[in-house]
Length: 486
Image (cartoon, rainbow, N blue to C red; front, side, top):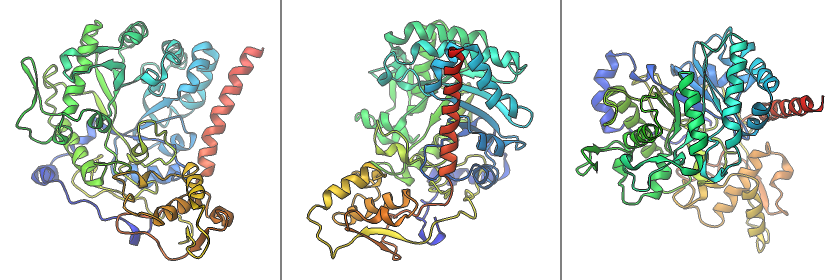
């Protein structure tokens, strides 16, 4: 957003200040084991080249995990040396599992053609296919899809350079007591999990787990916020002889216990995502997110490991996430759209060491915004039925900042209506008819933002980028169908 509209960054966390002299003379501890997730579920995503040249490289990000294979992102990453993990969406699991030709085509189009200039590390098969809410929908296709991709990599002579992993949601294992020693994989995934673990072991691939600290904090009221933010605790969680003073270590050891019970005690672990939202819920703020990220990165830098794996931290940990995404699924809550370290337009919301060390984060330069125009409610019109317009705007836009605890939750009426109108207006590229709302909308050049509640301005990009991803997936699915038509 234009510089005069940015929220002030939270001050450095006290724990970070104590480390600054050390960090200033040592290589950034993040460089060897920490990366960031880069998703594309945005109505107006920054151009991939701008993300790479304006955010990843200036901030010395060592590795990135792409939610899906984006040709724009992969082209932009070519020659940078940034390590890359590429995601395969759940929608492609069935065709990839059903056809070695489909897997070979996917590997050719998304890996082989870029392999000479992109430093690939992993292919991440599925988007949390074992999520409890998915039931058995994707389970039969996970391991066959992974195996076919592995075969395609072998045929392309890339299997020694690129490993295949499967991201497993935190609810893949059950642990109602929150004690790591009681954890085990869910009974309904046991058979498939055994097949997956054998596949990973046979190919020397790590187990990838996705962690949801904020969701866990919401669900476990008996655990303090300090436990999630790596703050010193007077009463750590005791599990037999082991003590846990933070959620992260307890989660890793829950995975270790589950792997051990399944017969794979020595398998390496990658944390595919761990982050904290900045909006859309109570305790979702930039200041708290900064405390979490600072605590996590500093904790990983110590390489102290966990009680069950002392001095053996996860092989890699990916921070969630690089940018806000206003089209993300909100099954867990509106805060899902506000996990970005940067706003959707590439402006830092708080300090986090993603590779640059103690330096402030570099913002994306030269962002192309639409004109400084906003859509607000016209108080001179009959507003007796404005609630219908408000609901329509929120249903087709993003009103998550209005959620309880959100940055705009204190607006009240009619400010909340104006926020909804403007969000819809910006998502529709400020087209005049998108501010009609049965004559109740009004276009203004006066910024209606109030304190920390910023009324967004859209950026010029990007529908083309989102459309490109959708078309690429559509074309692949058509290709798969055609294989079976032959």
